Image (cartoon, rainbow, N blue to C red; front, top):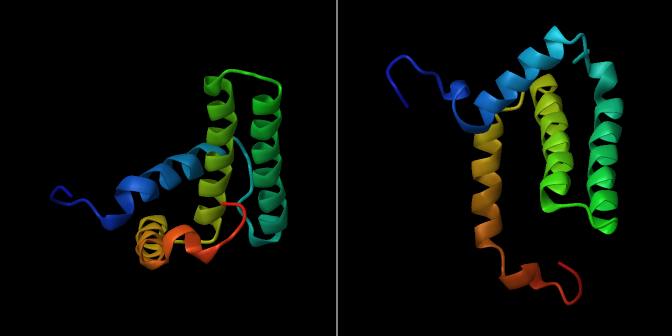
Length: 108
């Protein structure tokens, strides 16, 4: 972190801030009553990625749909006022502490 830089201006939080600036400029609301809609839009982007993969589209095209989902996730995290970097770091630590394949028999 450079001098004068706050923790919210790095990593995921920086991307979250960039997304929020863009969606605000484009007129998309980040109000709490839109939380359900934002969740549904994340789901739709993931479905588009699955469909692109199923149809044999390039990994680049599948990746673009996944980035759309990531943008929507970052928008939602900004609306929830979550410190994305801190939550990511905590979750990764938790996942590293879990057993191999998280003790599942199927899937994963």
